[in-house]
Amino acid sequence: MDVTFLLKLAGVGFLIAAACQILQKTGREEMAMMLSLGGIVAVLFLLVGKMGELFLEIRSVFGL
Image 1: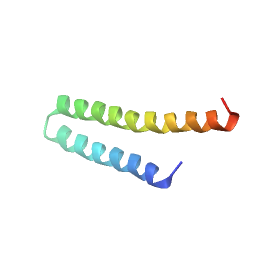
Image 2 (image 1 turned 60 degrees about the vertical axis):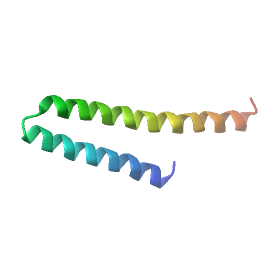
Image 3 (image 1 turned 90 degrees about the vertical axis):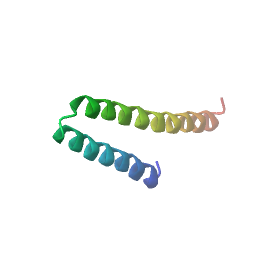
Image 4 (image 1 turned 180 degrees about the vertical axis):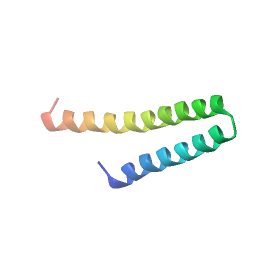
């Protein structure tokens, strides 16, 4: 796994966490919850792309 990918995931997590804290302090808990769910979905989309690459690599190694 590439280091830039890990940094990208950490950056998304940090930004989402900071934005959620700000929203919770201002009394917008519902918006903070929606933002955190959106962050989870965004990270899952990034991970699905990497999983696809992994399966293609495994397929090419075993010649399937």
